[in-house]
Image (cartoon, rainbow, N blue to C red; front, top):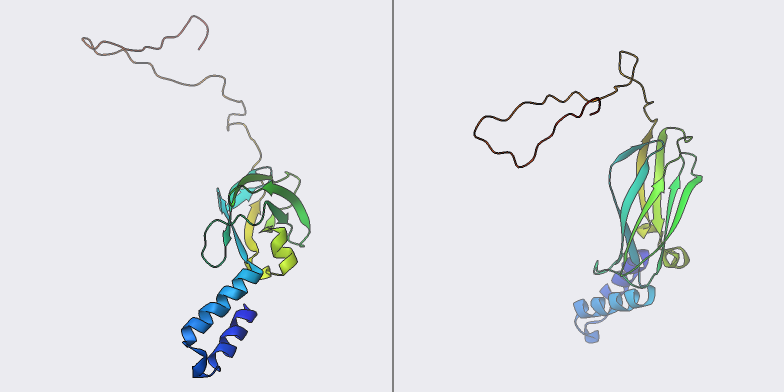
Length: 183
């Protein structure tokens, strides 16, 4: 973006003989985007927070930063989950098709609870230096609740399902009945 600001500043001080200033700015911006081809990444997550041992499901979108249309320049997307200490905990490499990818990240049940960082980028972004377009989102990871039996201390053995007979004159299309000794 600093390059765009520089182009705008240069275009502002051109002489009127150079033509319409709006047209000059548009041409310079077109040249800039043709040379750099910036991409943006967005991840659509299934939830805002997760517990340890759960899975993050997501849809990824890579778009042209100028028009926000699906971008087909990159074919690979990298998605990282970083710990609060900024160490990569989980990494996925996904194939992009038409600017889209779908994936998941498994959160290990041995991870500590805390605020993690989800990051997504393409190789083009890393090489060209478009760090402002790299997707980053903070995720809260909570400790998973332990599985505990009911207050009676025993797991339920069978469901309590009250069965009521149909009123007279109503024909049943489907019925459920208890077999002897089994549910």
